[in-house]
Image (cartoon, rainbow over all chains, first blue to last red; front, side, top):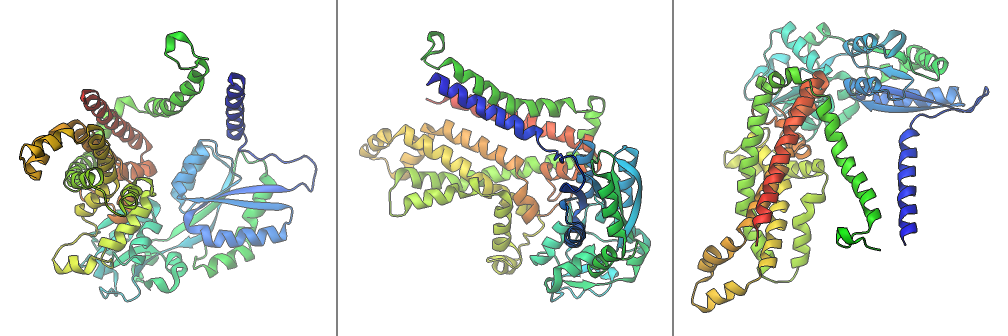
Length: 257
Length: 263
């Protein structure tokens, strides 16, 4: 009985420890070995990068691309803690600059897409929003991103450029949280990216506004220094910035870099 | 099998027990080790931190009060009566305990939200719940209520109904029995349940962000502030996390204190 229990404990401990240390995938030596490319990409890239990944795998059958989608600053924090990744695509240049300064990157970052803000309302637009200035009305429940996250920084810049002072009822942690409040009909309007409006389809109505062109968010992509697959990482970046990747991004509503 | 000096606990049990304890304590030590002590005070007393802490304390206290008002009768009904479907009801009361908080938040949204089940009625009454402090309190009450009910129901069952029967035979009416006999008897259990509810309300995150939103001083409680700060100012997030841990430890200490006083 005693021995059995001790053995059990030993097994549990060793498997736990093994699982902990087994997070980096190593390839067998030799050329056409299967390769797994890990791409850390901003949450707003989920739809388009999933498609790009599939197209890249089709062109490079020996490569499997796996993605981790999260907020750019979350991904950067994980990279700084040593998370195994080969490519990092951020939703803003500020985060990529921080990554470069922190010594996480290998070589320079390349811009591959841009995004602008758009007003999103529920499909019937209950508050009758037509312009950015309409959001300043105290009767309109507006939800925006908090200034500390990239979409919130962009919102703040738009407010500054246009002189429109928005009094939001909520400052959310991410653009998807903002969209969620509009999809559920709780908010009358919110500021999200053009690509989010496009991805939500008929569930939200997009209201473009002229001032949005003043604030353009640029997306950079770079190879991670600790990458074991620098060559493939470079090929993936070429693919994203090349005609096929650009076509997929444009279809999702992203602008040229 | 048993070793004499440890009253029947086999010696090998201490190894996994110690591993378990380390598993809980180590992350807290790691958290404390990352605190920038030189800036600690200024980080936790910044305006947004103070607003979040005050809001958290205020809403958690209100939620605890609501838990007592709603939970004491629920516990009484569960512990002192029997009817068809009671065990099903008991499972339902426990549901918020095991539900992912974000699911609770979505459920609340479709109950009290503008498009929700009660949304129209609430609007007719002239109340605004969406994006208000009320929404935070509702979310916190939803997730903390089971703690009070479970705690108190246990106390009621342990205490038994001998004294109540005696009081009733002596001519006391049910309300008098409840007020003079039952409640004083289970007061430690009620206190423990209330403190646990408060602690759970203080830590509530998922239902709040889903249902109430996040605005400084209105709906951004301490856990929401921590989540937001870690994007831009990890040092502040760590400092505030430690504050929350300390408050939680104090609260749990309080429960243990009341428990050991229990008969």
